[in-house]
Length: 358
Image (cartoon, rainbow, N blue to C red):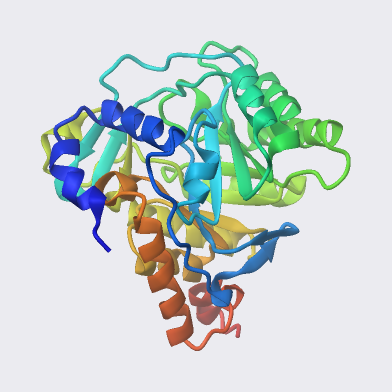
């Protein structure tokens, strides 16, 4: 099959990255991007939180901030799509330019700042949508908010009824003070408030509540997060968001830009944190692995480190939406090559091997 994205890449790379992203959203919204014949393989199927996932490869938050192209992206073959981050009130985000490519590293730096249309507009779009496919809703706080907990509670109250899972995002580096919410005491208060809001919003079969964490955490931070997650009874963790770290081998001129780094350089640190959170939680809550995935081998490494599901976004910038099919195909082959008959058997395999579990 002709890879149209690869043919168009020399022209796409001439555009400002945010302009290119906006054009992609418009093309998807207008049906100009054809649906892909989706690879279906029983080895990739699993049921998690009472939801049936046809495959574990999801679209990370940040691509479809405003619920514009959920079904168009599901039609590309993703097992689930996560929108957002959505804040209670609309906000423009940080000044442009705020999105930068590092092509030699297949990396991105962004300092978007939770630019989005706000709860009311996003809810209006979700109300018109015929529900199909698994949808995650990623929630954030407004930059000028003085009560972060109230912002997340408001987001849950407004959007929980549309979500197959909810995400409390306290790990973006581009909203001042946000990452401080990962501390033990503020995090416990926030998650307890979020769980109460979820119960009020959806009384029967409420959507699972997940927490998205940063890769730039101390050992004490990670231990505290694991303890709070287990104590509060949230349903899962997403590891990880972008990093503020800059590896020494980043040579592109954009490497000095401020913001969160994603793409290939994030793979190793995010996978390390993922494995540590699996160990710290004893594998008792599902994890979603995100950061630097570009191949089936990358996705499989996350799964063996403890992820039940995986997500990617940055690799699409360099390889197009067809990447999801290639990742799924390679992932299925790797699972079978290791003698597993289901993805669930591979989850945490590397961690379990270290402690002698089978």
